[in-house]
Image 1 (cartoon, helix red, strand yellow):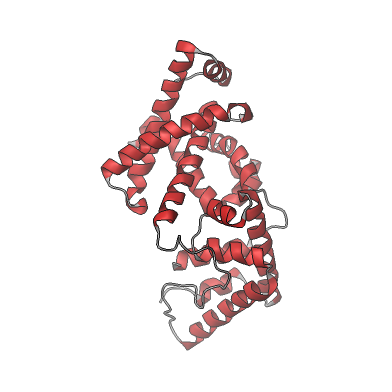
Image 2 (spheres, helix red, strand yellow):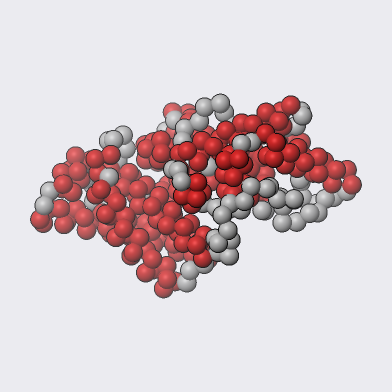
Length: 78
Length: 214
């Protein structure tokens, strides 16, 4: 694996919490999280468990990134 | 996308005839645009040319619409409907892309093996003997924890997903379970590795120092 991936793996170990939400619950909360971000609110503070999952699950993070860009106003896509 | 309220979207999509068709077409255009944009931005990472990306966006959009209609009852109303619909479409699309890439890779014929790699990185350069020793100690600690502290299923999931790059959904299928159970196994594995690292007094700063670029 690449160095950045390895460091992300180690970071995910050391930031593991005793209780974490699973992917299904993450996807249930993700639309609200993205709406909060787009409206300029502190999504990570309001839904910390979602923010944490983003750091622990690269596949879910990828969906989040794509969703954030897809839901931005039209002019941001140019 | 058109500025319908959540209630208007749900009513239109549950209706029949022209009203439903109009709503579906609006949704289709929005999802297609989102997928076309995503595939255009990432097509070299996924290995598609422009024509393949275009065709794939069309196929994935159709599949996404079916999934959205099937899951309509699960919409909790905690977000804008369109954000939720896009999330369903993108989650499905990325899952399909990962599956396709995995099936086409040379590793797909093998199921997730349990031993962790001898060395985790593509390159083995260390700046000096001291750094080499730090890298070796850290990896030895992690490797030992993987081999001794984890259950067979925890080790299979961790090694398969993290080191072999097997998508979570594929690992779940190989183990005859679902993605949430696989994430739980990964989580339990990480907790044990964390315990081992903390017992040895190793911090993330130690890791960064040991693996900083020459």
